[in-house]
Image 1 (cartoon, helix red, strand yellow):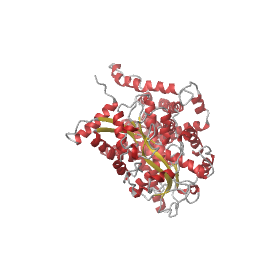
Image 2: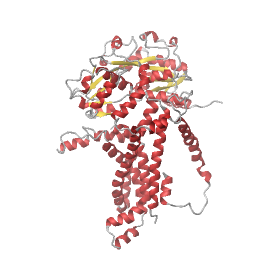
Image 3: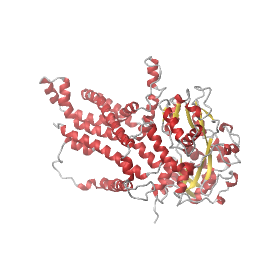
Image 4: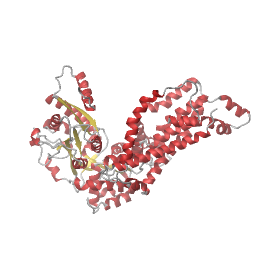
Length: 290
Length: 342
């Protein structure tokens, strides 16, 4: 994530004092022992051909990538991440503009409101969405009460319901980097654009958007990675008819005991999320840094 | 030179916690770590079994809250260094763990309560601690005439309010097998149930993960589901409109079993833990609200809230052979994924 943000801002090294690389050693060694090594094992397990792990072979890979169902699961997982990014972006940018214009005191209140969901466990937020989206939930009761619909809408266990819930759950991850960069933006550039006759929309697309792109990329990266791997929200709100990679991995590991197949699914999830993050990082080249 | 393991740390932490509460407690004669299902089971074993074990044998128990499938996955992943001493399992995972050689054999002589447990419920590697009964759960306010057979679940108006789950749990698997039988299938021929499910999918109220189902029932998203009497009693205890009905073909029963993990460090403490869990007083406490677990000790008089009058009834209920189910389960799960997914 940090890599994407740094790449996005396009800064080339820190000038001035040289930093001792050993400062990174504690975390680096931890990653080596507890991420790189297990990752190598995971990669190794994926090359077993059978669930008892007795025979080597590419069977798990060919089974996964040779089956249209599993390809659709990858696609659906990516799609969910994209939807979450789009929805959070559409809601976050207007709020970020309001935030920029607000007084310091109002900004503090806004930050508190934005952070509040993060202070609640994701499990609680997810179950709260069941109460809101259910047949006898808040939304349906309101719609029926207002006479807009006679029969309750089915919101739970649909992709729409899941995207709505994920948008709220992941929103702080989009807002925090975006707000930070919004506050750093030079007001003179916006004033200049307006003074030179650009409309509000033109100013937004030609000045504000390029200047805030690094913040958006950091936020989008976090939301994408978090939404595609949100096991609890996906399984509780999405239900059993929407199969995403995290639920598939859980099922293969704990119920079916087919670890090689689960390893293939895990690596696939890792690389699809990574590909999404790299695509976002690539967008960073369009950012204006000053 | 002593080596601290994670288990020592946990036992130590548990002991410290207890020491804080009971000042001047006698030094522990032993300790163990036991896996337990999260939720009611954890509450029940922490609240009922642990204090008795401490009082009677001065043994401390630390609990590791895990579903059956997760326990087996964890022990398999630990490869010979078991993360806990005692399993609690449903028949499916138990059969899988047995096949993978994850159990120590049970020495019946070390269990003082063994003679009060009906024959067949203690085997070479397993001690039954409770029975589970599975049938149809429904909302009696919405449906004064409840569905009476497994086939009824797929008829209007019931099907529109039905909550379905797949093969990932024991109760889900056995219920789907009984539904297959109701439509002319069997354990060996599950095609009928898949056909029925496929037709029902656009109509049903929810197809959910098993853990989400009670919450959906509570929220009124579903009004009918298959489930065990234990879940029904717990929801009822929370004021949810829910009732249990045995299908005409009979309720399904299966046993929850305790096992000692292969290579466990605290085998003696594990025997004391198991013996405590199956003792008459503890079984009696566990069958009361809010735990509502069907007891297996013949000295325990059955609580009327359980809906059965004697343990003999259990022997007349429908049972399944998990050694036949397990080899097919992966294929069923895959088929369910593929045919039910949008």
